[in-house]
Length: 354
Image 1 (cartoon, rainbow, N blue to C red):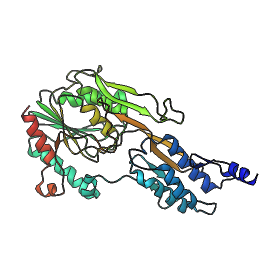
Image 2 (image 1 turned 90 degrees about the vertical axis):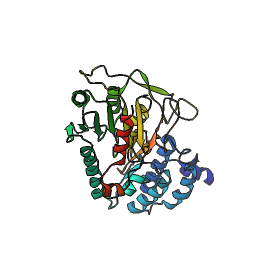
Image 3 (image 1 turned 120 degrees about the horizontal axis):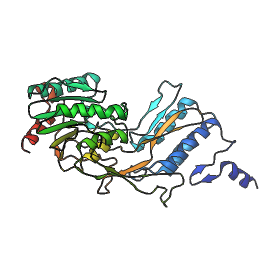
Image 4 (image 1 turned 180 degrees about the horizontal axis):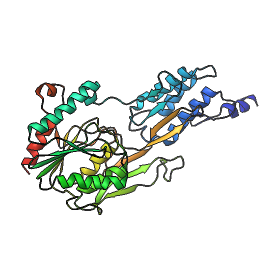
């Protein structure tokens, strides 16, 4: 009888303690975090993480005596092997209050200070200037653009922050300025991401016809399939129907990417790679495609996780790998000494041959 009573209090179900009034606040917060990931996180197999083993390792470390700081550190250690940039833990009231287990991409290790990033951005502008491009101009907070006699350059800084009704006119303005060019460079390096709605609205200005953009499924607490995922849903890329004169460009495009092209920038590259007139130059994107599912622990701490799997039109998943490039060219710190961006130079070479 005592054993049965204990089982009802601590009852282990699929490796997890059942939540109940008997649990102390630190234990309840740990259980909530572990259980939500267990039910909703999409990439344990891909990230090669045994989540049940993580529970057995870290659950015994949490007791009613565990302090907030100790609990935060235990949770961080449990999440660390996921190495997922969309996993975040934010703890109010602690000195070290934000944790993200992402492994920094090569570019971010190479240009590892804000000063170096600014020097890199200045080098890009100098290279454009040296190649006959005018001064860069802004169109909303998302775009910087310039052109030479034959070629255009469009930097997309992120994929959110501008409403749809303002984004359309901004794209019309940018592409009208590009009238007559023979090729376009689109730069999504250092792009932190945004929303699917925004990236599709932008990509529609470069679409030649209706194509599969991506295929997606979501992991749910009560999934429709045996694996707990929803049915696959396909999103199509279509040429924009609201574009002004010269508001669509389907000539040769070079898309510049690297490991600090994140999330919606990953998805943008996935969509653009389906277009036959696009060449991707640089390094693979970061490889975190899912929207972030945001949740809150009983103590008010917030956390996010990846709960969606994105597939390219060929049904390949590039999570953790990034969208591959057609031509590999790396930005290195030595580029700053030369004062020349090798990706811009390679893009102009490719476009000149089209």
